[in-house]
Image (cartoon, rainbow, N blue to C red; front, side, top):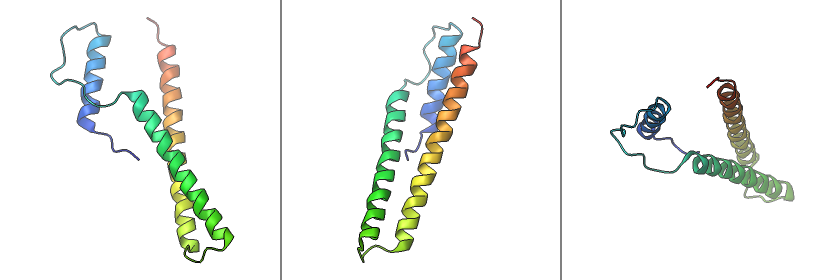
Length: 106
């Protein structure tokens, strides 16, 4: 999966906090990089690629490809499972954050 640049994330959080407080002062650092939607989309695509690769490896092993060992198939399946579980946890956090924001009174 993607590594998240913490300094970039902190800069974005500061900019959002300043905007939420009505502070029109610009943050010290400019926000660079991709937006959250692009990051989320790329992460989902990578999880999909890992799952497809795992499926292809499994099908090749089942078909009798002697160049693929059972250990390789099991490792690929575990990587796929972990990637999916991580994506599921991110989804749960996003839904929780959305519900919290929607329950705030303005």
